[in-house]
Image 1 (cartoon, helix red, strand yellow):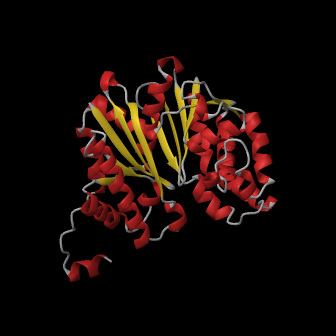
Image 2: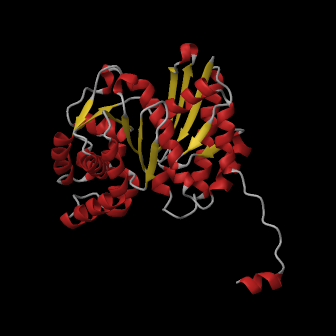
Image 3: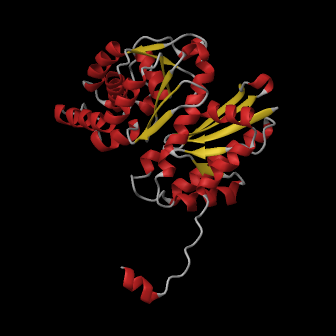
Length: 335
């Protein structure tokens, strides 16, 4: 059996096609389309028509590629940028009408649950009670669990792209005041979640996402070309020095550092600050860089629970039933 998934993120649309024989999603084809939706959409505002057009084109191409590889009808989901747009449902309807792909948005907690499943299957049961960290463009997902799915999951508005636009809008090195303000924001948002993780006392901490992968490489982890089975770690002490280094450089020069790609150079500092702060507040000295994340989690749910579970997720985006008409005199009396 061959299955696939389409992931509409803050910066890119990604397709993963995998063979599901043996109960594991073994990749056979991947592709991505760089849209940079987060740069075109201001928080709280509609996704503009030109961005919707680009999204339709990318999802359509991804669907056709999945079909060519023998995995028709891929489940497709969008994360924080689309989820937070006021015209979200209109965008989803347009994508479905133009491509036939039933794109849906995932609540942040569901993102965390699916990413946790991917990390759990990669890390294995020997990892014991597991904490998960995942920094995206729009949000930070945190989860903890002792089993297949997490006992606790949270999504916080601490994405690297979101914070960069708010605190570091210029290319140059940020001022000490802006750095201090961002650290204060991160600590405030993380206070309760970090306390829960400390209380749980995880045996193992895993971190996913391109942000953590690039920070791991910056701090000395093996490059991606060595393959996914090389163990990679990110140590808090080394990350602290990396934060100081990134803060002294303009965004254009951060792309010259090991592991930092040009498209993500601008948001690398905000991502590093979030990563260091969450590790410090939760008491994590080291996290394992896990190559499996939300896309693998979606495929694993498909393999382990069957395709029907996705129908439940898709229904979250359905229009609510219109309220019954209320007589004017009643509305006036109760206003």
